[in-house]
Length: 421
Image (cartoon, rainbow, N blue to C red):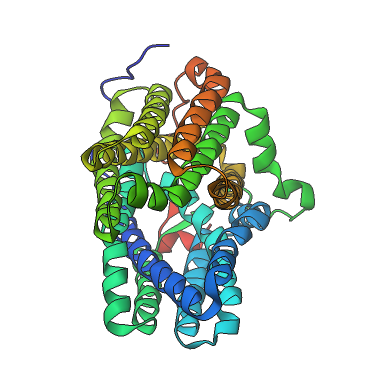
């Protein structure tokens, strides 16, 4: 398999609508990061440690349970009504969370996650309809950059706002961020008309994305590896606070700076990932990113000095962002329009299941195993998973190019098209 793609595949400047989506989603991600920290502190204060675990589960479980049905809805209904309606509902839920009693905390978080289970595949399916295939890597890199910026600044702002104003203001800010996000498809009159618009809903159709992933070797390998890395990183996240404070003798500030280091690595690679994925074969970049992530997790677990851990975490963030961008490119190019929403929703479900498993596994392992051993073991497990599943990725040919208008039968329409579509 040749390593480089055609040199002319840079795709030119992205449409203004993609920059607007990236900005809107970055604002929303920032609001989410601020709100997550506020919700976690409130759950700890009012519900105890089990309340924190319940809130985490409430945030992940709907993405797993509802993923087939959310994806089917995205593939049967125009995208703009979904995005606008869900964003407004989530804004209202955030306002409710700001002043609700403790008993409603977990149910409201679960409802927020129900909205996310629908909006995530809708956004993921909309963006490819706005760009050509050559522009797709650049577009995904731009979106990942916005998320990385939110990951860098969100925890600090969240902690500052909770310390100054308590739990209410951060949640109101998150509500406002959903309103900003809602304005993007409204102001730009963006919509996606799925090729399955108007077709009937059926139980077997809901799992078409799952079947495609299971049947297609490249998609199966990508999703399997992604799930393994989510589990590994999740377990590491559970153990790292103990590792940093005991083995590296760092305090809260040092722990926070490691988070900043990882976010900085994500931001750096996100800015470059689009160009890399346009210049080199995405399958090769994905493989390099996976190998790099395994190595950096291992290096983090073996670190004996704080600066060594900081460098390893920075490189891990860079590898993680690179993988995220290329995965979205490969998923888009290998999923036809009629099942694209269900494929993205299925991936969200798999990732949520992996996150739930990681939280439980990390907590159980800490009862019997040293944090350093957990981190090193996670790195070794990732290497094993990589060796077992990377074959189809290495054998994959270049992704088939989409049509110049956005490809795969998906149309990005503006307001004048709506009357005749």
